[in-house]
Image 1 (tube, rainbow, N blue to C red):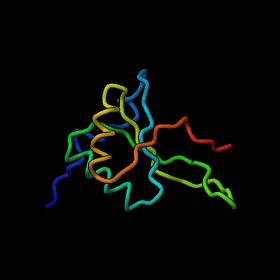
Image 2: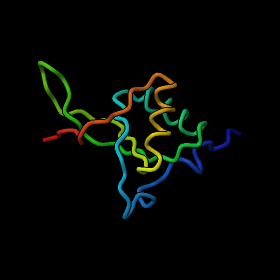
Image 3: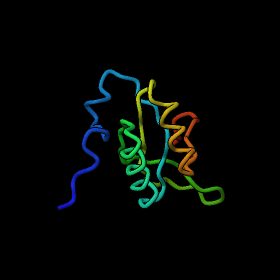
Length: 99
């Protein structure tokens, strides 16, 4: 039996209610998103993740689906450091355009 290792660090939407969640990463590939979840779990980083849309492409722009990772403001620096140590580039821009 495999233990549920995501319990305790992966938070649902209610965890972020009345709090300012900060977007730190947009997972464009499922494999990368699942690996980042494992990395955050191992590092004990509390995070939320939800599917959402973003606009991508240079020549042929289109709306695409991705995994949006969020943390609370007091966790941003620690999450960014964990991401950098594992080869992920933190998202630091404004919310992406989906219109």
